[in-house]
Structures are given as structure tokens and as C-alpha cells.
Length: 255
Ligand SMILES: NC(=O)c1ccc[n+]([C@@H]2O[C@H](COP(=O)([O-])OP(=O)(O)OC[C@H]3O[C@@H](n4cnc5c(N)ncnc54)[C@H](O)[C@@H]3O)[C@@H](O)[C@H]2O)c1
Image (cartoon, rainbow, N blue to C red; front, side):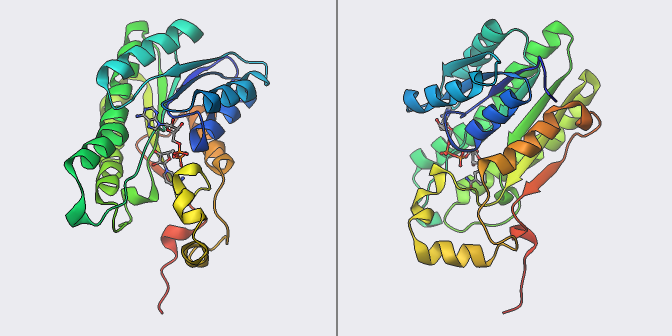
């Protein structure tokens, strides 16, 4: 077991990639705090899958777009599990609209959850680690769109691009505290965030044609890398982005 006895908080882990990470962490011996907004039932399913591995789990609803909520979330997670070792900033949303139609409300929501949420959850985690003089791991789930353009998702791309810079900056600032910070950049992963795409055979076929490994990714594909980055083998890894996309982002082809 690669995370035996570690305590992890995974934001947005009631479903999708976050759920995959929570379950995989539990399989490796970590206790897991499961955060979500929305369906409590989905969070309960994740908790059952986590505790089935013989570790402890707790469900903590909180909106990561609210600074008060993320501070409370870190406090409650450590109160429930004990001192935290790992934070995964996974909660994220996207809003589809041509750039000229993006509303202020949608812009704020995307930036608040994807960027401000990760920023202040990390700050709360760092304060928690510093107060105990302990090292830690921060893993941000960004996207291939921290680098690759994605027309009609301008705010999403801006949030993920900012997360890339935040990771590099914090790797430098937090390294002396023994805190490592890395990003995972998934490509197209089969989760509810992609429901519209999954229900559109034409778009899905066109996307699959661009993926050298010829399939969508699964949450488990992302979770395996998260385990590595959270574990001892990654002790000297910080400030980097690791792409998990079946080759999508390197697949430029002349038509
Ligand atoms: N699925 C993909 O293809 C893909 C690709 C690249 C990056 N990502 C990123 O991975 C992360 C997870 O995506 P997913 O596909 O699993 O999404 P999802 O929609 O399936 O799940 C999102 C999770 O985040 C939670 N959440 C949403 N808003 C929240 C908030 N304000 N506060 C707390 N929790 C909140 C939801 O409850 C849910 O558990 C996101 O950051 C997303 O940008 C996904």
C-alpha cells in the first residue's frame, strides 16, 4: 500500500475523476475526506466505496468557490481524520458559450470554483501543515486546456492556465516547507462533465479520431497518477504538470 495511514482531502469527489481518486487513495490505505456540492447520494456511494477498503472516510459538503467554505472544509477534514497529508484540488466546472456571449455570472462561477477554490483551499492546507510543522502534497487537477486552446470555453481555459502558473509559483514558495505541488492535466475523461459530448456521436467520433490511444480516459487513468504524486516515490517531484490524455495533445496531423 502506497498511502498507508495518510489523510487526504479530495475536493469534488462525489463523482467523476474526484471519486476515482478518492477510491484509489483508499485502496492504497489512505483515509479520505469526500467533498462535493449537489447530490449527497453520489457522495454516499463514494464513501461506501472508500470505506470498503477498510479505511476511514467522511463526507463534507462545501462550495469551494467560497473562501469561508474551503477554510471550514480543511478544518472539518482534519478534525474528522487527523492531520492532513494530501490535498487534491479537483472540483471544477465548465460553461460553454462563444466568447462574445459569456456572462459575468458564468465567468465568476468558473473562476471562483476552478481557480479561487484551488488557491484558497491550498492556502488553508498550507496553514494547517505549517501549524504542525509537517510536509505535504498538493495535487491540482487542471486540464490539457491549461495549455491547449478550447474555443467556447475561454474562462475555463483561463482558469486552468492560471492553475498551471500557480502550481509553478507555489512549488518555489512552498518547497522550503517540504510541500510539493503538481498538476495533473487530463484530456477527455468519461465523466458526467462530458455528458453533452458523450451524447453526440458525431463530436465524440471526431474526438476519438484525434486520440492516438483510440479511447476516452477513465477516472482510474487519472487516479493512478495521483497516487504516484501523493506517494513516497514522488518525493522529489514538484512544480510540474503531468498530462494524461492518450496522446491527444501531441497529436498534430497535417490534413
Ligand atoms: N472529465 C474530463 O474530461 C476532464 C478533463 C480535464 C480536466 N478535468 C477536470 O477534472 C476535474 C473533475 O472533473 P469531472 O469530469 O470529474 O467533473 P464532474 O462534473 O463529473 O464532477 C465534478 C465534481 O466536483 C464537484 N463540484 C462542482 N462544483 C463544486 C463546488 N463549487 N464545490 C465543491 N465541489 C464542487 C461535484 O460535486 C463533483 O463531485 C475538474 O476540475 C475538471 O475541470 C476533467
